[in-house]
Image (tube, rainbow, N blue to C red; front, side):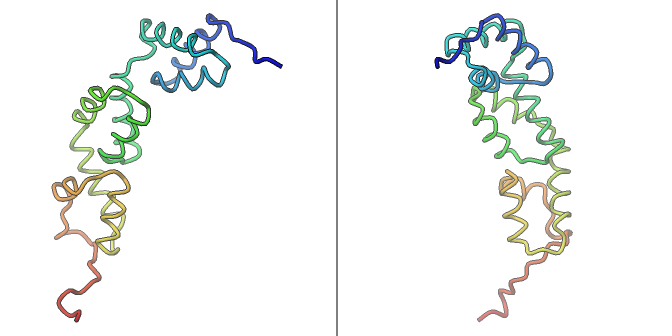
Length: 160
């Protein structure tokens, strides 16, 4: 049994509805088209039309992705950058969006996450923050280890 081909107009309509519900990138649309059985040529044609009609805009998608990940999931710069690269977006859009992230919210997220790990070993807290995509420079710049409740359980002075 041969796979059925999808009409390009029907695929465009389906993708327009898909893009109207949330911000999408070309990779999201490409995956939808592939699942629906569209050919690579049809997929490229649909993506081109969606970009012309402003349903898809890579720069706009990058800005929305950065905002949402910082505001709602407390991700760091590195994790956000890797997430955008995984979507195969242009590097200049990624760098511009990450450079424009809301610094006060970003700093508040770092402090909030460190406070949530109150009483834990400092190395464990740093590992956790690195997994969330924050860099050592972010931690040095925004974290106030002298006034937080993270403990350094290893006693360097009394260990032989």
